[in-house]
Length: 127
Image (tube, rainbow, N blue to C red; front, side, top):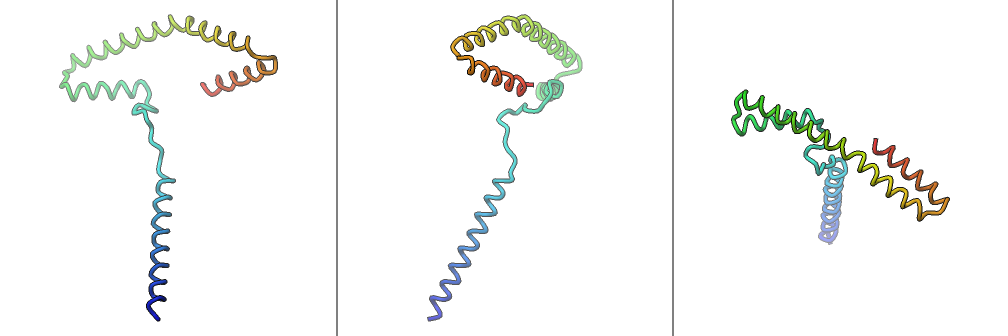
């Protein structure tokens, strides 16, 4: 007769312990930080460059002269990217303005007002 009572107590203890285990695991998952897909997220261009040069210096055993030349190459490349982006910014802006005009053409007046609100919100979130 005591055996069914003892079995019930053992089962209750096992259920309690498994609940505590699952709760602890769930809490750990809930409080754990998120993972970023990008390894460069949150890094400034200067930090990225410093890390890149450090890696190049240590893995390739660059001397000071080579590091100076690498810095010149990186400066030149940055300037080329900047010029390219500035030259094509006007063209990209024109493409975007054309899209906006074409979308507005298919909308009713009330939809156009809402579309303008959507665009303003997106522009605000961009900055």
